Image 1: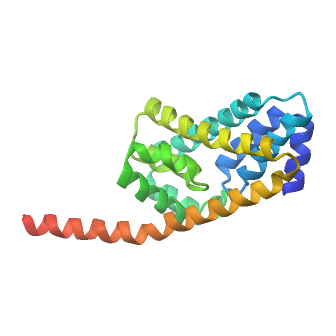
Image 2 (image 1 turned 180 degrees about the vertical axis):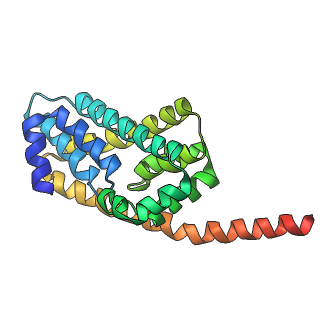
Image 3 (image 1 turned 90 degrees about the vertical axis):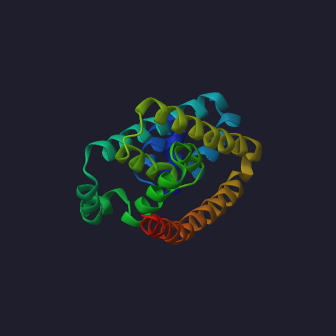
Amino acid sequence: MQEAILIFMGKYGSLAVFLLILAENLFPPIPSEVILTFGGVMTTCTRMHAAEVILAATAGSAAGACALYYVGRLIPEERLRLLLQGKLGAVLHMDVGEIEIAKVWFARRGSGAVFFCRLIPVLRSLISVPAGIAGMPFIPFMILSTSGSLIWNTILVLAGKAAGDSWEKVSEIFGVYSNLLLMIAGSALPLFAMMRQVHQMENRDEK
């Protein structure tokens, strides 16, 4: 996959960055670390500028977030769960468990989760779904989502630009960071669930 991504970017430049980041948001396993760090490298050997790559990536992120927001907003939650457990989930590489993690983060942190989860791979895409399910107002959602994406994209593009020929090592470092954050987010799910159950039991006792 990585070789195909690099060839596509080499041929189509910023348009490729936009389309690949859009796809990365809709199909989470596509590695944004590779796309963005290599995009940074391309600014050192082509006519592309860092700002151009960052803006193209952020536009792709915003478009993908918008699409997933409306998936959560328009499809009933139980229906969506069934779809993801079937062929659609396999095609999109979306797991119900990952949606649950994003849902818990949103329940715990509210609108702030939309911003912070844009800095956590996989969750950066999936957080849009529970935001849509919860009916979060669209404009605040897009502002927070786009702001978080802008930070993530800027860091990776500039890191790739600074690394030059060593960009793959930088990409690997961000890949480790990505996996670590996802593991932490996933391990927090049982804890959040237990805390919610305890809170519900306390409320029942008070009544």
